[in-house]
Image 1 (cartoon, rainbow, N blue to C red):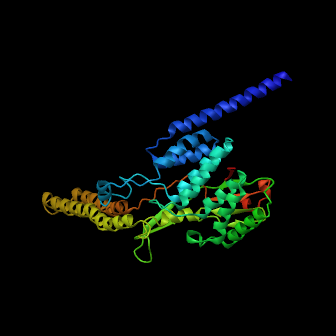
Image 2 (image 1 turned 180 degrees about the vertical axis):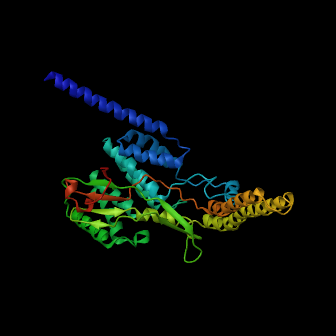
Image 3 (image 1 turned 60 degrees about the vertical axis):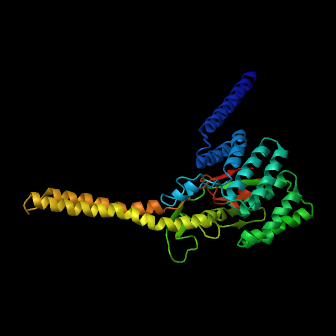
Length: 370
């Protein structure tokens, strides 16, 4: 009997040591100078239960990545090279909010309720603060509302549910069923009926990759048309929970170059257009010169009979001309950097067993967060 207890204790200690080593390795990979990598590793740290790493580096990233620092030299040079080459990435408003949520959830997991509440108030602040990147979003409001209830603050949760129900500003296009769901939560809170089993939050899948192409007509986002490489899962509401996709987060990326949102980025993109075309003409002109020059030289050397030099010049010149469109595309490519390792959707539910939650049915890659 004692041998079994000792063996179990050793196995438990070994698992803890492995988890600790994993967290240390993750922390060692974080480099604040690489902002996107830092954000992605923070997602990995949270999913692996490295809450101390999230708290430590998440707070640093939140402070360092939220403000735009303008440099006349960099902003001017950016008009002649690919977008975002010289400028540091600045967190979108939804990323600031989600980072605050991860910090709050990490404090909650480590039984630091007061610190978790501070981060939730910071989340609310981030969604409404008019920084360089600004704008509220429904996803973070749902996460915030659920976290407030988990922390025993239903009155704070009611404020977020109210915003979702009223759908003003950036929330106007929210799914009608989600609005009804929010109204139901408000009524429940008003009747002083807490969720006895507690809320659960699941992250679903991975945020889709971003694609773009040039579109001069019908686009309000400069001359860019930005789209996801695959669609988002639809919204879902059940008697025990709801599913909300991060499509609203994608829209912030898609409209990054909109004149009304970021006039400077919009202006730079239009100036970069003729620059990119000129850059693209260089290899095309050079390639044509190689073809003509090589064949003329070959004709002179072979006394008009033609030879291998002309054929080689044609192959090399055509290959060089083919680089022209690639150079244009590389120069015009918009800055689409974003926090990549975030869920495609979230499910919030009070169903004790995830199998009992209809909005989780058929969802692959669901991972419980709270």
